[in-house]
Image (cartoon, helix red, strand yellow):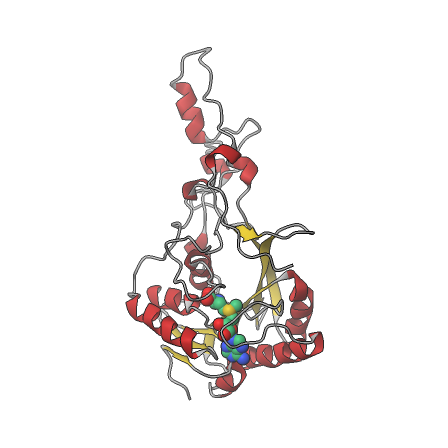
Length: 321
Ligand SMILES: C[S@@+](CC[C@H](N)C(=O)[O-])C[C@H]1O[C@@H](n2cnc3c(N)ncnc32)[C@H](O)[C@@H]1O
């Protein structure tokens, strides 16, 4: 049996064979998408059949090591989302949510709509018995924040299954406290970027998944550790972790990142958004209504600055197609 609280330098299929069956509480996998991405060692352009055969192998490995009430989250791009959903179900998983993660700082394309989302599948082994800590992930509702409705549930509501920022709701630009599921991709200029892995996931995104689908002290697995985001978040949130990667460089740097992280430490990136505010037709929130109350009659509202003027220009990653 491999030790936990470690990243192991081994192919994940082989690595998972060395984990006892039914040991892991939560697995998060962000595999190569088979789109020709440049990794340190992995060749990311395989024949479709070869890629899918490999995916079946590692997904079956995840299924084997998960506890009977365990959870599996899978991040994947458009190209193979449908195939991997079916394949995971064939292996024995049940899909609870098909989340779209919409990120800004997306990949600029020349002859098609620019890539700005990924798919996040929430699978469980047993559709009747699984961990879902609703109180850890609730957000304030529009009833609370926009309408001040006395009937609002005081503990808020569960977030949507689209993890999104709606730019039309945010004429002043992307501000962390103004949206709910806005997790920007960790773009090249971001402070939190570790700098050695182009696919680094945001810690806040993993934070929601780890909080919702595992408890303190439980074991979190990432078969494709990369920059060790999942494992770092697991550590900060008081879980045990285990990960695999085939790149010695990513592993070494991932280990340093983990060593620098503290149990109970703050997650990087924008804080968990505090509000989920679909604004009313004229863009008002409860807060803006209060401010309006202090304005004299006939006094005009501040004109909303245009998004184009207030947003920083996006640093565009290389165009892959
Ligand atoms: C998309 S990246 C993961 C990024 C990660 N989620 C993060 O936040 O940094 C995929 C990783 O899988 C690794 N990889 C590719 N094939 C692998 C295999 N057979 N076993 C383990 N890791 C593998 C690559 O080296 C790469 O670091």
